Image 1 (tube, rainbow, N blue to C red):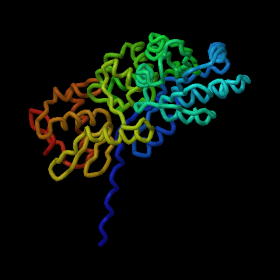
Image 2 (tube, one colour; image 1 turned 30 degrees about the horizontal axis):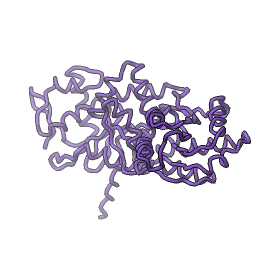
Image 3 (cartoon, rainbow, N blue to C red; image 1 turned 120 degrees about the vertical axis):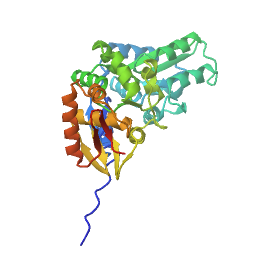
Image 4 (spheres, one colour; image 1 turned 90 degrees about the horizontal axis):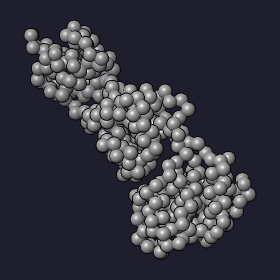
Length: 371
């Protein structure tokens, strides 16, 4: 008699809910997470407003063209490319004007845009951060800064540290605002995400830009949920930033985050895969293996989706495997509260869904995992 084929191992993010706050390339990141089993929630925290028709960008470009430029700092690929393309559309000789200058790239995408525009990149920092660009310039590596004209392509925020640091060194800084980050036209998804974070309804939130992190915290402020959001990130919800620059607003708010070694979307998705399941140990419960994930349990390699009350009770029991947890304590773990009867119903549904004697009743005391 042929034995039935073993069930395939669950995908690494099956049972977890992961939020994507990105405005650009959100579908690409979402697909990477979805393929690994995650339930993906899209909540763009920002949108890009290009300034191609903006008088501010016209004025900034004309100021750059007014005299020779000694140094150029390109901070983003999309921004620097957009600036060159827009100047070409205006029939302004920006590329020729910048050709004698030393052009610094904050990261590889900016470097690609510099080369794609027919210019030569002179240097870029290992960290891909504006702070390292500033340190490099202040070190004298590009020569004295006093009186030199430096064009800085902004990337959605005014980069006050970089601009003020260069000006303090005596440079004539020309900020070029190619686009701005603003709240999305539809703020409902990011507001729902803030509520879900505060309530523990998501397991991880990904950030691919500092403005998105700052915007989410701003929405939390607006909703009066900032403290709850900070607490949730400190306890159950994992913040995953694509790099240290992106993590800046989180750090300032006291929110710890994890980051991949390379600031790339694929590496970001792999970081989520590495970090989420490792937080939830695989327990030996009698003859069974059990792992409690975000909204599901993995029992003997099988994913079992559970209602919110049941997963909350199971998570509480899994925190102290083998120990009796009183009904009164379990009431506190129920989403939205409840009473002893609600705990009993949650346990009944949990046992029915698992189909294995994993949860024991200890008469007049409570429940425990049967380890």
